[in-house]
Amino acid sequence: MNWEEFEITPSRNNFTYNGIKLFDEDFSEVLEFQSPGIAAVKTQTGWFHIRPDGRPLYEKVYERVFGFYFNRAVVKEKGFYYHIGLDGLAVYKERFLWCGNFQEKISVVKDFKNNYFHIDLNGNSLYGEKYLYTGDFKEGVACVCAEDGYYTHIDKKGNLLHNKYFQLLDVYHKGFARAKDYEGWFHINRNGSPIYNNRFSLIEPFYNGLAFCVTLVGKQVVVDEKGNVSFL
Image 1 (spheres, rainbow, N blue to C red):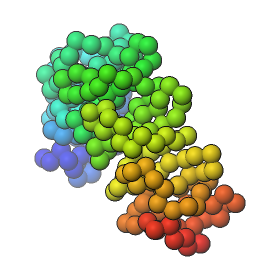
Image 2 (image 1 turned 60 degrees about the horizontal axis):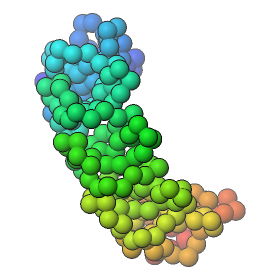
Image 3 (image 1 turned 180 degrees about the horizontal axis):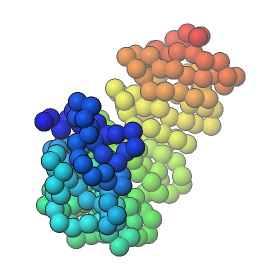
Image 4 (image 1 turned 90 degrees about the vertical axis):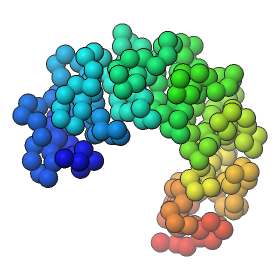
């Protein structure tokens, strides 16, 4: 059986393959199977990971577990978060108030002073700065919130990408990111510069060169990468 074709049942407590339920006994809750063919499941005793045949990946049970990304999974034990490997053991000694999943081999973590920063697959900090908030890396760039509450982008070494700050900010998607200043939402390029002069109350990322937006007066429009507006 191909685990990539397993589907979660509507009750979210088991899996099906070609429409047939996989396991005789239901779980309390399940998450989808992810590479390399592992799923997070919950029973009355707690959370753990299983193989495609339903066997536990390891013996330990946790308060909470999440999916594997780059052979690392977030677990919660005694109220603290950290990452484990496929053997079910911690891959580093540190513990955190919260951990994200590894994206581009980098994970967001929150320390005991409520600071956010990024770590590598072995738990090492990528840089020395701490932030009010950090997001996942995408296209080699992440959003971070500085002490003054404004957002900017950093690269994987913690360097500022463009040294421009915004009220709100999103990651890059196909070379463009959503940003908000005191006038409204707009799209920026990798230099942090607006790609048009308009401002909107709502915008979406570009999808094959077009982005759905809502004007400041509530009109629904589509905008292309040059800023040309078409009303719906």
